[in-house]
Image (cartoon, rainbow, N blue to C red; front, side, top):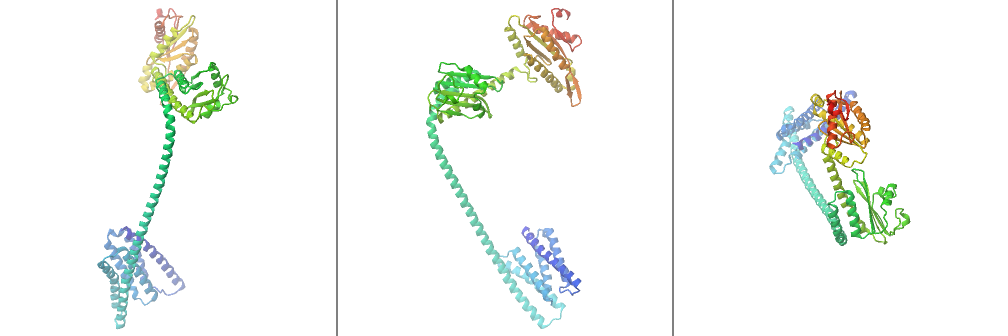
Length: 557
């Protein structure tokens, strides 16, 4: 049906054009006061046929071929009727439309068997017979008319037969030619695809051959270095301390490669701590000068470039960091992670032409192992940090802050002091009950942020001692100094406003107890106990106060 509708759309376009021409013709005759050479009813019938074609096309012919055949028989009968008209222009247009309609039937129905061809010819002849019969009835029947229409029918029958055969044969030839063209096109495309595949395969084989040759050359070098790398990896993979790690690397390179000097500089991205290592077979110790050169930016061109550097014919005047030692060959390899340089590995030998391309590859492989080992060390450090930090606030947890206090007291020197403040958020349960536990967590985090900052500013330590309790350790601060610091801390917390759901402002306050060792307390237990009692004194006497410990405080509880 889609094919019929496609042809019908093309025919409707031609009918529409013809209707426009006829309308212009009618208007011309009307304004020029001429008689129409085409019968008015004939034009009405032609327009009606066009409209009916459009309607049938819109309803898809009911999806039935029979409707299409019946409709076209009716159209051809109406066209054939006007073939009998005496006016030459009317006869010409009628014959043209009749044959166009008949050719459309041939194209659409595609007759192949003799019976199908016969049916098609009768479909073409029947409208002529009907129209001739009607025309004969409407006019006087004479022998001349009978002979005229008889000859006309015979001629039209043979013309229709010949036209049907010719159109069918031409369509068949065209279809076969199109199939042959498509077949040749497919074969040509297949041949081109095979040609491209062959070229790609040839290129792949050539590349593989070159790679194999290259690998054979590298295999001899790799086999000699593999043992050294495996030993180095075995050592450094088990080390989780960066300072110890770079020492092992420097020792391994000196022992395995036979260079005179190996220097390593590493910046720990986690703590921003700098590590330096110099291992050399010469007697001169230049670790301090190496540190100074790094700090002054003497190695900045290698550090900023981020690319390995090799010089096997060293002119010592070009390198200001070479002092009091003879260097003929030099390799400098940056330590890079995520496009960021975090260190340098430097190897020196007194002999020229000591290093080559293979040496550079070896050092690059060592760098990758160092990166892995340093990553492991950083991960270990982070895990240790996580283990000692409170998950909500980031402050030290209770166990670690207590260990800090013990360690600080163990290393306290004569005339040294240590102060300790214990803070508790007032009416915290009411905050949780009123605003919810999630908001309570926000309050704890906001207070913790202030505590951590104040502790850092005074070289102290801050920890979460319990749910809403916090510890601040202030080494080398006596009670008077600590009181000033904690007072400022207390005032800042009191000034804090925490927004609840974008509108309500919630204010918090704390009760604080402050004690010191050895001023009041004598050991760790008594220090914590006295600070705790001072805090509870504040709780029991109105809250929101800083209570400084003194000798008679316990008696007043």
